[in-house]
Length: 115
Length: 115
Image (cartoon, rainbow over all chains, first blue to last red; front, side):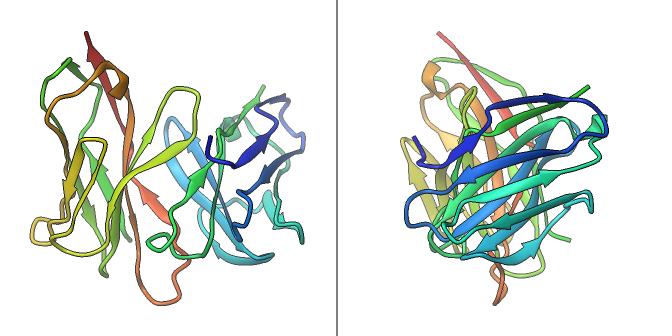
């Protein structure tokens, strides 16, 4: 058990809809990362928050947004969903913001299916 | 930009066979290198890492050496077990000052070990 909790585990929704994915980091971890894993793109970094502030953006679409709350949990919001958004979305946390100093701990992911 | 290339899978081995999964990278700076493992239905787990050239990371019988001259970080294990069946990801983290520690992953290599 990594200590990172993601909910829900599975999500099935229709095109055009909006969903929210939730992540609770390991106790004490200040950094939260979101990754998307799809068959064609592999594992892609989306966004990183550290102690409530956005630190870096990767290949995140404008239809997607995220935030980290004062209690350090994070939410990833996906809107105007398209079939191609179907993927496994991972959250990871770490104590600091440099991977070489504190490794990432991944949750088990939320599997999103857009029909 | 930075990138990671892994050998394509699946790799199928018999128990106690020798394992090599090739990984090469392209990076402008001096990245840290990682191997992550993903078991079915779970998130990624850090297997080992190396933060500078000639470092050897090792864990659970797996080893990988950071080779700057060949820009490689091949994963090896002398004797695989059925329980090693999983997907293995090579990744790098740019160490440029101010970097947020986001990881760039390879496509993953599926390992299947048969009894």
